[in-house]
Length: 612
Image (tube, rainbow, N blue to C red):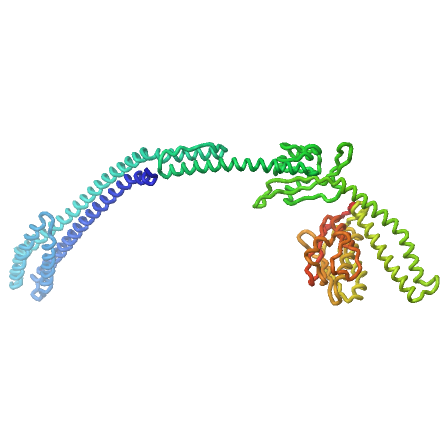
């Protein structure tokens, strides 16, 4: 039997009872109300007719009494009362239906006929005495008898109306009893259907509920018995098919997961770096052999148990920032001794996010940078040595060219002067390259220290701009400073900031055609102070933007003037030592925009000595 049929059967009994109760109630109440209404309507008409007849008789009595004492009294009032009585008597004849009422109406009609004849005789009499005697002995007794008969008819109608109301109340009470009996019978019948059909509906659903809870706990081997062919049985069968599919999916997924884990672990073990994958709570789920042997980061342990503080800090930063964190400088490398040799590992943390950008894990990578560190040390030492070794003879060459150009050792021919000027310019350019190399070396190695103190942006901007204005004027490029008066002091190194803006303004001047403009602007950006240098020059293609801060990089096709490619690299190093980062945006033919932020001093007294 189908579930729908069971539900229909369970509800048919109560519905049938309700239908019967409704039909009986509507029919009985309707019939009784119609009968009662008809009785009340007849009674009301009869009472009204009798009351009108009584009024007509009383009017006749008054008019006849007045006629006894005065000859000049008009008989029109008696005649109108006669008409009124006759009309109401006819109405009462057609309406009389209660027991005893027709007989009284007949007697009333006979008395009325007699009274009418007496009235005709009364109107013919003359003399007060004759009229009085006739009125007293004949008219008054007959009219009083008619009044009594009319009153009896009124009482019969009123009594029948009261009786009909009592009968109606009794019928309503009987209907209520019948309705209560039918309601109780419907409830009993409904309970019987529930007791009979309820378990066959509830039991399979309860079994399915327990099975769902079992599956929720991971028991996919459960099979639900489909005891019937109704919808519940079909649901149980579909449920079994679902669990079978889930079991197969679990088997294949588990095999795929095992393959992925073993393949991933094999790939990670082949790497020369230590790799750890952990969940957001810090529990390590996968770690390769390097991570286990060098850092004791074993599967099943936690990041909190790691002795190295840098790894713990890196993990906590990723949890907060939700972005990759890479420690770039070699000073941040972790030092490890293996087989008596010194090794350096640079840590990096990458968050693992799901489709909704929620953090579901963290990958920690400890890259072996021992060889790179040694190469960098060799490079730095070579740059320092070469720069210092070149600086001394170069100083002598620059001094010699300057002395020759002063012609203190003798006059120079135009050709000689031209060659000496070229040698001076090239030596000056080489000197600046060496200075820039030494500056970068100092910034990268930490040998250079910066003094971060509160200062107004006006302190370092005006000095650089005034120094650059002559060069801008010679080239025909306008230099604009947009410095509002409400800009607060910032934390910066004045000398380093002058180097930053000197390089940016020189860069803008080189690649902006005459008639163009370079604008320096300062504004408040949330809680920081934003500095912007924007030009209307040649612009840079998007493919070259990621490389413009690299050392010795020059954009192809923009070799208008000889450049070393070190200026923007120095700018980047200085900005990063101030705890910020420089950003660039550009489009070919529309100019270039450099921007960075500095922290406001907030009116406090700051003086920080920072190693770059």
